[in-house]
Image 1 (cartoon, helix red, strand yellow):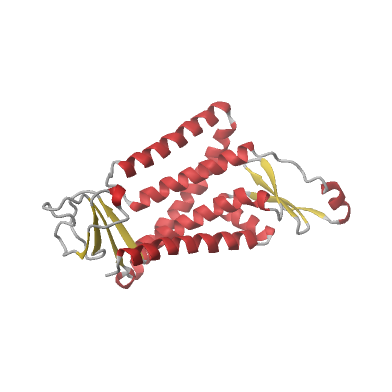
Image 2 (image 1 turned 180 degrees about the vertical axis):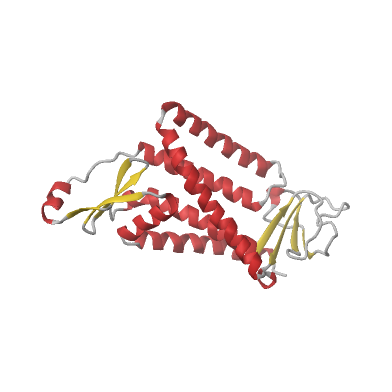
Length: 264
């Protein structure tokens, strides 16, 4: 069994590494490939490209130009990066390295037998006890003052082809849900009352997530991930709604010697 320090290093180090590599790749992508990725995930259609300097995409009938600058890429890279990060985490959680947060007297599982006991969620940096629990026995014994536990297990050796396909189906379902709901949320946010509703819903989701973590409710790790993804996409919609969309100052000059191509 890993020490808690090694477990934390693997968990947070892996997430940090995935984030850094993912965003580095996305920012380094050629504009046309980034536009293709946006089309495949969000159906943001490329309507025009100007050489290799600018790509104009259609976001629910709003036109945005993506150039090689950080500011023009960031809203789109962050949306794609957050979606891909969630998909990777969901796949890893289900098929490689599974983690379980326990707030009540749940029973031990063969899949995730390595556990750390904490006095509460707010003391989760210093475990009271580290142990390998026995199957079908309470993770948190009744004679202990601890009321919170984190258990993990390397589940990859136990995965069958069906298990991996099922997890891929979950990932595909998340992408399909984003594909269906994002355009509706974006269009709704155009309306003044829609924008107010979206802000209120965003605040409610943030409050719910804080309450869930503070009150130590027995909510799955995947639920927390999906709530965080929803918050990130809401922020992305707000940024795009309030972003000033203008042609670059040298567009007419650029168009005079670089062919401007419409994409059909």
